[in-house]
Length: 222
Image 1 (cartoon, rainbow, N blue to C red):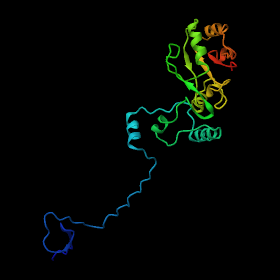
Image 2 (image 1 turned 180 degrees about the vertical axis):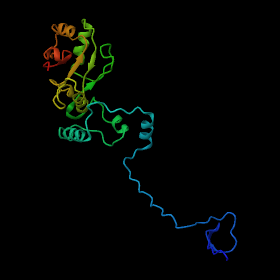
Image 3 (image 1 turned 90 degrees about the vertical axis):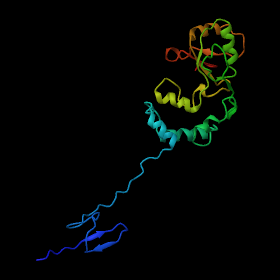
């Protein structure tokens, strides 16, 4: 009894041949055809550009404890614009690097970063404070400035980090228009002592906040 068979032979050019001799390279499917599950559609969860991808690959990305959320940052941006602060345009690092310097920003703020032994970290400082610290250095103060003018966002970062600081938008560090403006220094007790005989009419006062913030100096001390 002859064996009945039906072959579906897939040839090299994609045509089907029924019967006849089977080429060695032919593939025979026996039994019920397998059901091939449709390919799953992938979803894009996040997208990064080449530079971000490189940073992630380095494994150096770190989100600080207490860092503000996107919602908090949006609120801060809104508050800054409402306060008349000119913000850099764009979302790239270069847009921030090319933004106006602290020497001339919204509200008539004037700050400089003097090259001096008492300002080794090149902190921007309200221009009215600079001659006072220069005089103090010449008359025995051996300390240095650790913080001067801060932007609204720098102040918000301090708040988020839990450091003792005035709320963003309310700190004298965020202004340089007298009586606004402030500095934090080392050797604060020595600076207080030296400034007792400062001859100028504009005073720089420290020690008002006591042990919670002994390094803070401003026109009013707060």
